Image (tube, rainbow, N blue to C red; front, side, top):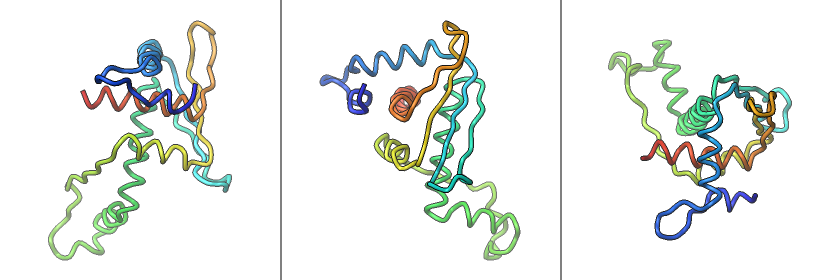
Length: 151
């Protein structure tokens, strides 16, 4: 299944067959999940996310992307300085200030494509073991997950 099939929707606002399949797959997945990420060629950027469910894994991935955006905008570094009390301009701590990040589905999918490596292993009760998934599957799951959040 190509990425285009995964993220496209049919005309008239109805989901395509690929999206419906992903929705059914997300509903049936509820086992332990591990996402493996490598941000660049440097092997030291490898990490993993250990989650109880695929939804928790997708939520955590979205938070990683949101932190990436905040860092890119310089908001995370500013927060670190505020916590240390070095640079809050005498206005008192802004530690409780809510930081807002907005992005579209295409943005997070581009982020997935930019990662050096990304895969997931999800426990499959039928197989009595873990099923390995690549970037295309993760992109499809992100599409379904973010669509549910938007409803």
